Length: 368
Ligand code: NAD
Image 1 (spheres, helix red, strand yellow):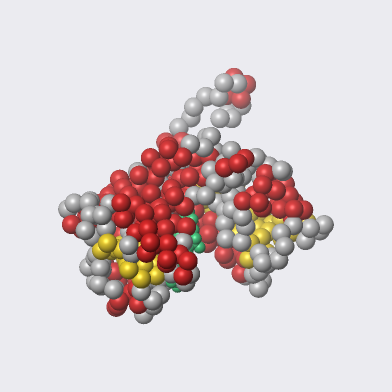
Image 2 (tube, helix red, strand yellow):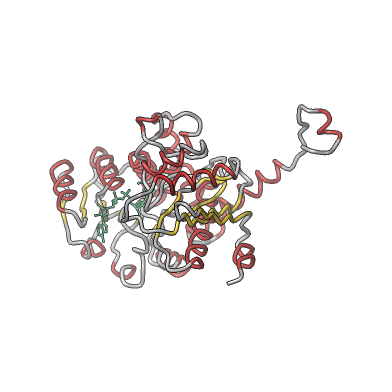
């Protein structure tokens, strides 16, 4: 793999390789696009088989963040970091502090947060070396667990789907199946139950199922049977790639709208497949942007009320995605990409206007 070719192929701005001899840190930070603002994206820790695998993953994830932030209307760009290592082994303060110093070295072009394989404690170590980190615990003045805000945004997105499909955004009396009643799925089930929806759920953990039955009167099915349940809405809130060659023909719902990342196994084929089956698909990175909205809020001083309100804005964003899809006769996941790309292009153009800095000598040197 030629590294520059890999970086250039999806127009990444900057890729930083971080190595520290003392802690054994091996990390890659990818900044995809900062047209809208600093690149924000979590740090994933994973025992990648090779540096090439780690690079491929970080480039893909960073680009995804550009689209997610842009579609969510945030003034943030896309970035991500990966640390090559086993998250099951004890975490090392030295390693995360070394990583924090590399983040600091980027001077705010990249803002990190937790992601799979890292947690709030890791980010607290990172924060000892840099302020360019978000998603810190509530105890330290941060935003804490993002799942209630993600669930609120998912609920709002689901209401927009209902409006689009049935002409009314009320979810009262609708039958919703939820795959995974963990952090987000639980809060989503609570909102749906309050709204009068009937729930069928599945999960790997009995404890999570018992909680959903006791609190929301949910019906329980086996994990594989969830795809065969006849219902109004299917909400994937567990894993990626749940819409695939096996499950697509089995789905008997009118809407797929849930919090899971990367729901389409093959974006092009399965996005089109849902459309052809007459199933309305809520693009995952649009409907689950509440988590990102939550951490973005922390940058301005966290306020959960404001974050929840902003997450409700996913209703309007989803409506715009559906308008684009209809106008351009394209699947909704493609319409979401177009919405994001257009915002980046338009704001990028606006930002290219010359505005004078306060320092006159800089103006005379042509520095803006
Ligand atoms: P979680 O781990 O708390 O919950 C996931 C639940 O799914 C668990 O209870 C797990 O037992 C269950 N599960 C796993 N495999 C399953 C299967 N095959 N069938 C049924 N259930 C299964 O995770 P979470 O934080 O609730 O996140 C859920 C999804 O939403 C993930 O895809 C995550 O990437 C995405 N997401 C989460 C947030 C957030 O704020 N937490 C934000 C954006 C996206």
